[in-house]
Length: 208
Image (cartoon, rainbow, N blue to C red; front, side, top):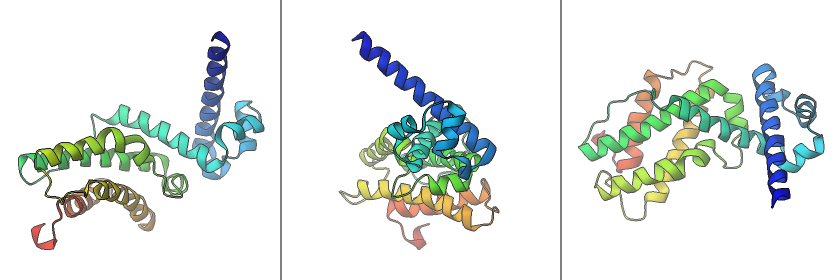
């Protein structure tokens, strides 16, 4: 048992060194600077050990991004942008809650940069899904459905969860296409208000 504990502690220490080196390389040299060879030199962990723990660069960056997003949410959860949420009390409470998490996600995107966001969530993997969907979005959807805050057809909750992920990716893609002109306050507020209501409430244009 003691040997297993020592081994687990050693593995955790190794991963922390790799993540710290990843963070330093990203901040100083950007996405292209993160290679296993550079990480081995910066962390003093062998190339083989890094590959053993993470397999590929994409996987390593996904793990790094999830960890960093968790810390970002914890640090900024009290200062997320407030957005007016029209509708009945249950709808407004739900919309405000979800929008707060999406504004945190947008702030995180702005902090780490679009190149990182676009390349670290390949093959359908999404940092938002990994970090917040299970613990926050799904319970919020279930509460809103019980409180009749959502006008949705039975069985549609999983589709709505996917819609939330689509919104997250849309934030990154529209930002990327804007030539860095994306407004992370007013533009984001307008997009979230319109798109969220369409996705969540089965509304058409005349209802918005």
